[in-house]
Length: 258
Ligand code: SF4
Image 1 (cartoon, rainbow, N blue to C red):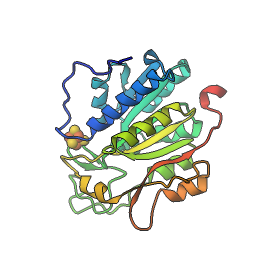
Image 2: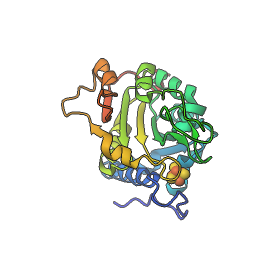
Image 3: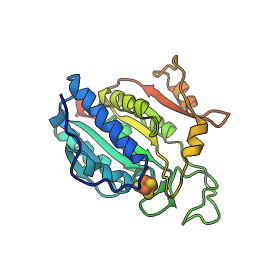
Image 4: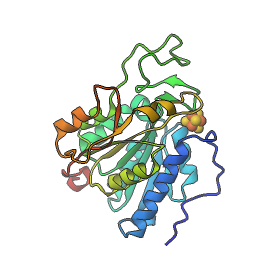
């Protein structure tokens, strides 16, 4: 079986942008799930908000919906509620869902909607050339923070665990295989699946060297059903950034109860 998930659209991300790796990982994840019979190509719907991430819809030959800024999540929740047989994925960015549309993200987790939310987290508003978002690090200098940000960034993983998401993960766009496998696990999960994807913006905030030196993966024995352990595993005292599936439990979904 060979899925034709590509489109005629010319890629317009900056050359070398790690959004390309997210796109390829997603196409491959969908292809493998379809090949195994776990998913039907015609039953997938993807949505996006506004930002560099949103261009991904142009390069996916599947049912898609481009929402307003920060509004991909309620759109995809509506699709899922109307037809629970569909598999739905919302692509979003840190500017799109941690800054503009944060309440939608939190309430989708609170409901345990059976949706997948993949955040392209480049720690800035990249499409508008580099303003700070909720995950910009302290000291970040950009158009709206010329003297450096004085705010601590949010921890999206802890936030989503607190809100009620039942699958919480983080990966790095540059780690194609691991990202693909985490996407497959998220899509297979029943309930709110959330992946924060560290995605350097090589034009306005190039963090590739930082991630190269500071990524660490959760140990094999990590207990994904232990909320307390998952919560504390998101941060390490040595400053390394842990990646992997932190938390996963099965609880009734919004759509099952509707
Ligand atoms: Fe990628 Fe940044 Fe270019 Fe946007 S501005 S396409 S995030 S490198």
